[in-house]
Length: 437
Image (cartoon, rainbow, N blue to C red; front, side, top):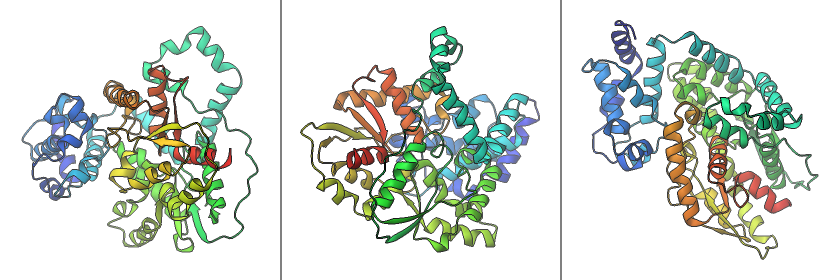
């Protein structure tokens, strides 16, 4: 880092990081036991929300000089926001860590490689759903053409980091031919479906199952054209301008006034969508539009509950074989949107399963967007602890509500050698399986 950078970063903190939000922290420490990185770092204060807020304030005030250790403290934050519901003062930590990362990216001298990666990801792949579909199309070709088997046999994957090798093993299978299902003819609720970028490509079958369930329960479904990635990945990576760009596209794509709900089936997307209004606090016209959009947001498990899925599940014939299932919370679904009980009530209603609570379900699984690729050591430490809990309760099915969590738990099953006896599934896919198999 050049000698000029520390001062440039301090100035960026002054510009980007709201001092009033920093001052909300009372240093009480209620956040500490809620923070996975604090726990798994051996209770290192700099790896806690309280410690990171202190570092933000110190950098902003010029009390400490910017260096690699300070940057690492921010990089290792999962952004899971488990500290927020634990905080008695209502500190907006999620906003603070995003402002901090935005400040760093705006002032830091990025390498040519990082600039190319960020531009390719945020200006092309995650800003254009057509390009995302093309990219996933290449993945599907790799799976179906026989190339995947050849690559594995010759050991080519050994050239890649272990986390990427693990992810390759758990790529979702190509979508199967859909079944013809009987849907309710009485349409009581009109919903717009936010299909998502990964959900509408890599997890296309889950999206199809989502539509099946909603139609079965009497929904009229609108799927707006031109919708894009929600912008969460950009926002969490210090690219708030690019996140706002995607949000504008989505606000234009959705006519929120014309539907009862805007439903999503990805916890991370849902949390970011539910906070679109804070992206446009200085733009009165867009803020008004965003507030209507936010008011209509609902998670799939919450909507299924409202539409009577519990009664439908309880009424189906029960199998004699009891499947032992557990649930891993999506951090943002739980900590930002406050959806905790709905997924559990749905799972408990499946009458040929036994639901067992995962002891650390409230703590992050280590996925956190692309955190498991950028910080694989901490991500795997967190995942290994999670899988110890899965072994402890002897669950055979781990249910999640977010694509990143799903892939992470699939990696955990693979790493633990449990692929023959256990599985990880999205809640929509499990409910669909139980109702229509």
